[in-house]
Image (cartoon, rainbow, N blue to C red; front, side, top):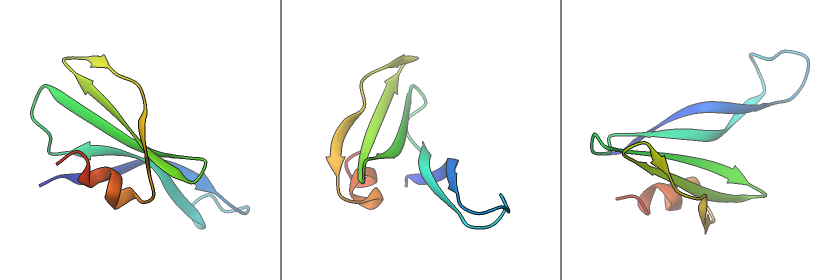
Length: 73
């Protein structure tokens, strides 16, 4: 089962602990040699895959975070 861990956020307002929304996530649960990140770019979600330490390109134009995550399963 794949899960998401947010690692980058948008902040609004003077208090950085409130009013924040994640826009980039690490994907947890992939095979040992694989990694993936999912991030929002201009209202679309993209996936970055890494295998054996070699990263590909950001790919996809997913309408939702869930859709991007499903593309990895």
